[in-house]
Image (tube, rainbow, N blue to C red; front, side, top):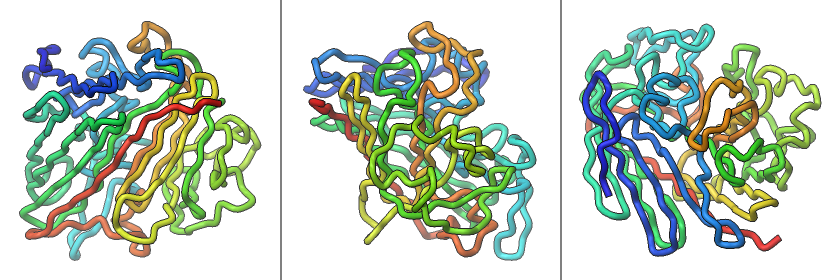
Length: 347
């Protein structure tokens, strides 16, 4: 189902509603490629929306900072001081997060209107980012396809090509609350991350370049822990970010889809398994939600009311030669896939 959902200065915005035979519904906006709602059942069969967002387009226009549900590009996460050098040429990006450039700059892909074609269970979005857009070189053509499968899995497939060397790191910035959007915090959600290392950050939230073992730290989610169990321990890394806002180095044996994270809400019984082809995962515990935004349910969003699991290449990779490369060249195709598998647990 496609419905008109409002208009911005750039033009009209549509909402595509995807459905499957298991009662799951996903709504995607052409504005920012935003996942506006994800309705899934709990252990009793009761359905609720489990992603944070707004019930009107103007909410997203007026509150871009949280990036609720948005497609992020050209570069997800932070680039130090908004600078990088590629093939000997220096590039300057907008500074929009302290001293750094975040999520593609001041006018990233999250604020653009994408062209879309859709069916009952899928929508494909396309965006052309011109050479020099937000300081990035090359004309980048990006395509993102959301597909809702039977069995309550939402698959996201990303592709991009360029006509000149550039860097690219696309992701989706949905915030999950498996108890239901607006029901309170996620500190009781139990999270498992398939990662033995993470990339520690400095006070500016830029990676130091180290790949540090998680063993013996509050960053160790190799076994399930409640989000809030260790978040106030006084650990220096948690202090820098006000909670969890770090990149984990996923345990991988090949380039295929690999399980990255598993989340369970013990109260509702809803579960989420995230699989990806990406090398990293940014786990963010909603530290900067401050009670100033009213969400889809009409309730205020406060700190910790949702968590993000952004599949990605590592932050600041263009300035970190030891990190996996994010360079894309003419003739190459950037491809990445992520699957959100929803389910329930009986206990």
